[in-house]
Length: 69
Image 1 (cartoon, rainbow, N blue to C red):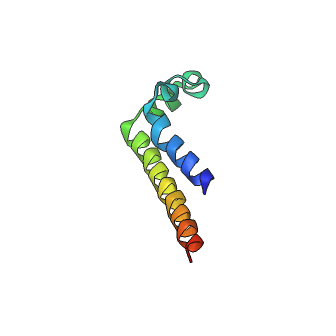
Image 2: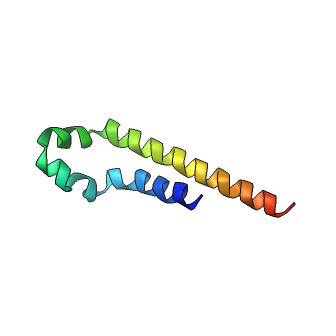
């Protein structure tokens, strides 16, 4: 549960930060840098983050409702 929430937050936030544009792999391979800086790629990765967040929150909701029974 916590894993999904943590990964989801990272995948939503990191593609839009400066870390995304200034890491070793992007600077070492300019072709990869052009691909990674594409807003559609960033949006797709953020979309995966939203799916992970949803899975983590759904798991948390299931645990909370099971606790009250």
